[in-house]
Length: 433
Image (cartoon, rainbow, N blue to C red; front, side, top):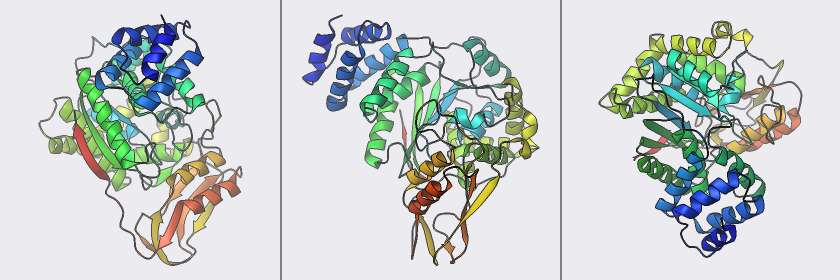
């Protein structure tokens, strides 16, 4: 493989051929193409982008670097959901069992938190004993027995993505839209899906803060889904404010339990019903989104979603007693109150600062491999746009003393008390493949 020829093609802004892409990907995974060659190519892609067919070939080559899971023993439609993440975004945890209770199979490969957002795997591991490191055989067994499997990327699933993502991370190339889209979609396509719902966040707490770039990312991923014959819908949802009332691993798990019991914050339930309803529609189990939303809501209210998650916890080695006995979840020993310094209306300004505060408390990672404290986090007492009086409690900081001063400084930077504020809608736009 002539690595220099491939680099020169993209350096000059030309389209890479399918043969060039396949040769590069195979050579890089095998160690025959070096990191410095790969870095140069990624930089050229960052600068020049990729055409639609070129990106499809790139994503296909990533998929070919490992195994695509197949579940011949499962007759249910296989539908998953992916979120670009944000503060308090715990939708996946109640959504997966609710969708399974309504007849779908949900093979969900998730990630760990890094920076300001929490990872689904880390949240699940706040459940005592819950195992997210599943082999492919374990993953299939859980999916067959419960309708849900919640695990991480194994070494056999898109190994090219592991190498490329690590290289992008250390070379400042994370923000490339085609590389983000191919990274996300290659892992989702490796699940052997029939359909996919994408939740692309906007706002200061989102991975992609700029709304227009978020729209481009969503439509790029939808284009890849279409190229691979996977039915898909993308939602552009609000991360200008925290989702729900909790941010922090065990706190969000407890809030997920509330949702699975027909309780909990209205915005969390709304997104669970909306995304779950669309999953049911794409999977062919309902005719309309409204029918799907109603079925998901019934599963939350009649106990069937909760019962499914109990089975999931048991199947993945966790202790289901924590659903009834919340004291079994990790809990911080101290609580600090943040109060309003003046009369006004709460407006969130910098949600990344809230994620940074959780990291300072020990509940997030500054680099991969950092240990995390599942018990720390933030509890929001006042919704965005609500009027408060001086001295009112705005939020509670659950902590162990570590990094408290730094966390409080970040929390103070995250909001403002103003005379009037109109919150953005929960869902800004919906697109389909």
